[in-house]
Amino acid sequence: MRGFAKIQFKKLSYPPILKEYEIKKILLLLAILAVGFGVYQLSRIKDEQGMELVNETGQNTALVSVILPEQFSENAKIGKRIFEAKCASCHGQNAEGQKGIAPPLIHKYYEPSHHGNESIQRAVALGVTAHHWPFGNMPPVEGLTRGDVSTIISYVRELQRANGIN
Ligand code: HEC
Image 1 (tube, helix red, strand yellow):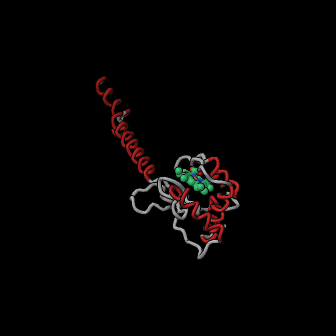
Image 2: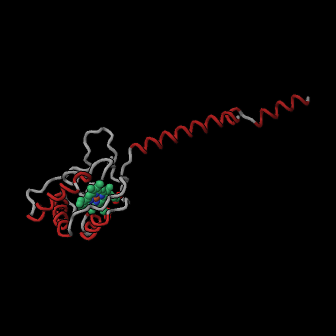
Image 3: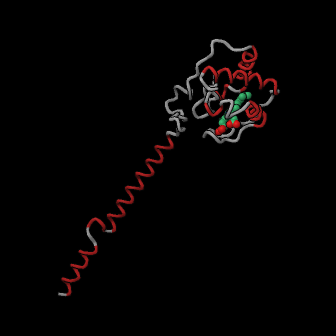
């Protein structure tokens, strides 16, 4: 009688699904799923617009597609040349950004009202601590006067306007 009561007690307190090893199995499975999901997310770092910031295919490295204006002002033409020499290696030929390297400047973050000309001057002179993007810091760019940078600003603003960023 005693033995029977013992068996019944065991059956009641450990329904099969709650057996300790089953719980462990379930937790292990959940942990594997969570880690897998995390790795998947990390490999596809995107900003809130769904931009793919990491170059997965090794082909198209541009972060946005940039429409070129029909023509640039004289100032912007000078800025374009300086931009190509000093900025394009990171920000891309037409400031379209490069996956894994640097953001596009043709982006609403950098519209004049949110990111005035003085903050562009400051970015070039002092560098930028990474804050908007996962690309790391921008080092200061040597060898440019404020005048040089103001021509770059004309160039970037004209490109932005051609792309509806005012
Ligand atoms: C070595 C690569 C590199 C070069 C060269 C470079 N940049 Fe950058 N730049 C970056 C990165 C990376 C960021 C993004 C920082 C962040 O996360 O906000 C950035 C951000 C910026 C910003 C945004 C600053 C802010 O306050 O948010 C401006 C404007 C900018 N760059 C302009 C320029 C100009 C103009 C040049 C050329 C004179 C230039 N950059 C050259 C890498 C570079």
